[in-house]
Length: 253
Image (cartoon, rainbow, N blue to C red):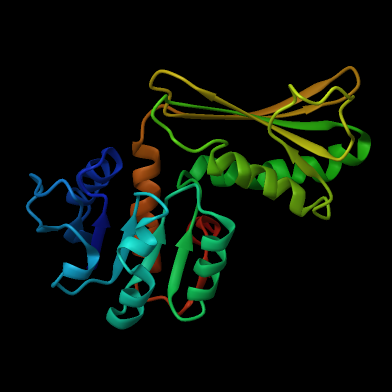
């Protein structure tokens, strides 16, 4: 039985994951961390990870990047033997460096998107970019999310761009805004556009625009359950693993 701590347990994703875990005999949430106090799922809730006093195998964090510092997460994980599943987006370059450094001593899985479909899409768009971009196709990404999302572009959009760029020798620049630049589109560029509105759960579209033809890849999430299922699968996978940096590719392969 995997013993899990849920950071952000009273948020939308935290409640979603709590429901998924309640129906899974292979994992249990032994404690939650949230400033909002107790909940109806039966496990104790603490305001900070430092206060958690029950043994656990893995911490799943679906909050915000500052939680790393607020919860002293790396130190506690090392001292208490936690593996870390980091599902937040919007990490700064400095925070990513710290995460990578911590993975030398802790098992960490970080993913901008926990969905099985998105992780398959990451593979497909890389294969497409390797073939199409050398033939003159222009890659563009359009992502759409609800009006409460605070970071833009989404971490998933950046992951898609990075996946393509990795097979393009990292020679492509990312363009987030064109309104102030009056020039034709450079060849080695990946355009990334963000739409925010309503209650859109998450939609990512990758466009390869060539001469007289356009190829599109699209993923749509209709509920947060797709992310919750992936996070639970990641938690079960990561518990007990040796130190290192893992991704959802490791979970689904």
